[in-house]
Length: 176
Image (cartoon, rainbow, N blue to C red):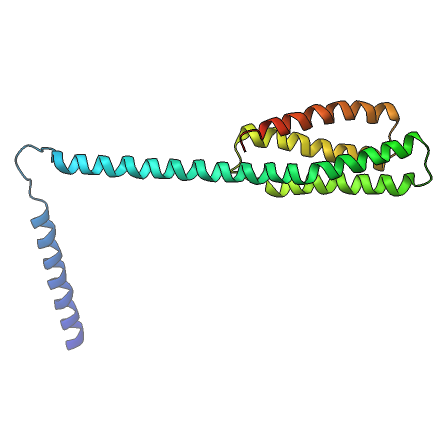
């Protein structure tokens, strides 16, 4: 029984102490609030510095990401175009190695698309990522046309789009 009395007494004392703190903290302070100009100036300066650093960091990340995707384009585009042109030459001359050249062209086109895709990330600025995605998709479309033995007219129509989108992708990389 004594334990319950002690526990009740402890609970009552705790409630009184907590109530006293609440009452002490609820007093109103009189006067007029004033801005501490030196602290405000220091705070504003720190916020501006932090914002400038964050902006600079985002710009550096965007530039690095654009450079990476542009390097993937530059490093991998010519082998894909060369393989595709070798297939076209073999097709035009009805060469006996047409099928291996077609397979090589499809592989090179898809590999280039994959290399570009591997470097595209949210940091790449839209003025670079949009033409890169379009060109990547055209690389895959051209490979798909070869795979399904599309007609010459269909392939030629895709080549016109392919070349325009390739030029746009390279143009987007001029600053990188």
